[in-house]
Image (cartoon, rainbow, N blue to C red; front, side, top):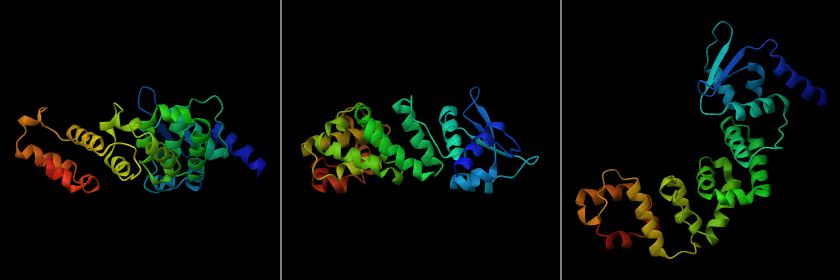
Amino acid sequence: MTNFRKILPNFFESEYNYDTIIEVGEQPDAQLFKVHSAILYQRSSYFQQKLTNTIKENNIFNINLLNISVKTFNFIIKYIYGGIISLENLETSDILDLLIGFNEFNISESVDCLQARLIEDHASWLRLNFVRIYQISFQNENFKALQQFCNEIIVKNPNLIFDSDDFTTIKENALISLLKHDELQLDESVIWDKVILWGKARTPNLPPNYEQWNKENFKSLKVTLQNCLPILGIFKFLVMKF
């Protein structure tokens, strides 16, 4: 196994007998990686599907990956070949990018390890970037450890997210999970006001002043908040006369 791990990275570096070209990133910063379909197929279910659905041109698979940086993919492809990744000298944001990338390529063992590393060694940075981390944790069910980390913080410090300038940008599933916490140490009326603020930001063409709203404006906001209202309690919705 030791010799195997030494040989494969060299195989990647030499580009010997490659049959796949992966273009990573967008021009003018894109980079080409010359790799081997057999290794990709065995190491990643993402690439299994990608290769299955790609027709060779001149005996070469051509794959484009626009939504990942060259830096992140370089780490991932070396892990695919060698089974080892070094996080030394990496910024916390880089480790987070790796987590998202490994998850996209369905390499679950690295997803678990990177979550643990972030929580154990970079908790202060996660708190400083809490809204972003909270949103990312709900992008995929594989981020359970990050979800738990965020939930434990929210119960005691809900203002970290409710008072954030980015509050209105959080996705609906993340907001719903937040509202389902019975232990939130925050007044119910404050929560309601914040949810209305979130709904207004996501409902187009609403006048800035409530007094200018017509019946259709209220109906539009109701549609935006339809999945949140049952959690908050319908009586508040009636009080607002929607």
